[in-house]
Length: 279
Image 1: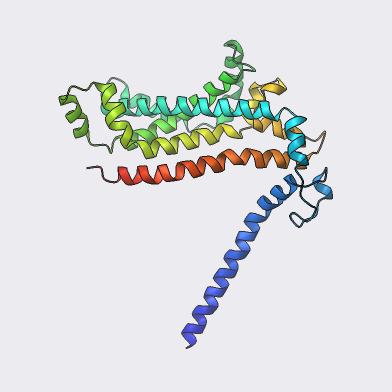
Image 2: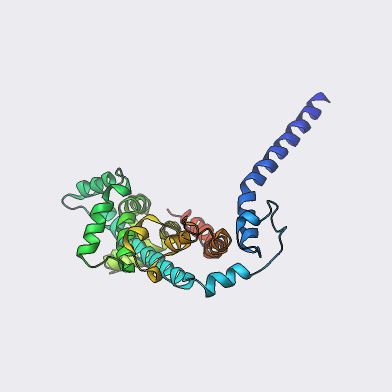
């Protein structure tokens, strides 16, 4: 009897702890959402209780019609999509080459890519700025794509190669006997098996540039060419505090992430299930 009572007390305390922890984590998110739909002009006038000040689409109307948010959203989408496409194609092909071919300096090149990950990204910012200025990439979206894609390639190539190594070479040999070349083997045999890793790589490559602030701030100077990170920060940059408009932008920015997660979750689970039956 005592054991049962003690067990119930532990369960109640555990549930209570999880409830409090959930409230602590969720409150800032709910508060930002409520601020985005607040009819007030500043967050300092808002109540600490979410949605207690009313409900209005005023901030979203102001965000879309009175700012360059549409340009920022479009620019960020272009940069993120282009970065994802370049990263997936280059890393997948590179991983296949390093996994299946033997050539001079192969290990040295792999080690060099690994060493590149040791240094923080801000170490090369001055060099990146000079290079971008020399090649005409300053204040250009394609310059950001080059920086993001180049930064993604070393680590993601290692990650993808480790997965390609698990694909049996017998599949390559069987396809080669049937007359397939290396490109056919890669795209029709290896790529379908790499689907879960490709989805993971696409998600991480897309989310990286989506709200990055440092590199767009370094490279972009025209307000209409800003990305979401550099654009939204202007609402709370110290000269003007428009947190309600900033909150509306933050909520809008989160929508693609929710859609991406919902669409990719089933595909990832299906891909992992299919990859689990490899021989």
